[in-house]
Length: 197
Image (cartoon, rainbow, N blue to C red; front, side, top):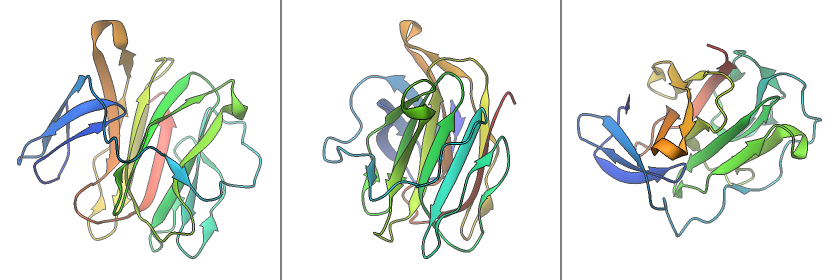
């Protein structure tokens, strides 16, 4: 279980059914599909820079700025002013499942990033559409280490530090870390991610 400040909703994150009560407590069960009307996770142009060599790196694409450049292992991405619209993630180990929540779209498809395929790098969100990346859900598929992160949402400030410790399909459990908010129309303006925390 993880807590979230949001209105009562039912949806799916990373292919997992979510039920969020009015109190903001979300529970997850492995089953179903998240949104059959949104069958994509990225639209636009990804970052043109080479992938970094860190264990967990990320590159924010911001409105009227473009791709910011790679940040790794707890360094803050974003500038606090421009909304984050897309996020590229690089993993140097394991497999990470990522799913974007975009303004006027909702939850997009989830994307699995493998450390040994495509340089361990992929991205989610949109570019050139002025569409906020309101939230991002992240889960470790191969739990080499614990991932943690935190987001700063425009008008709300920093949320609580979140954690994802892994996924155990055989046991029917998943530990999802969700940064940002959904259903409130607010953009993330800063975020950071880190391994081994």
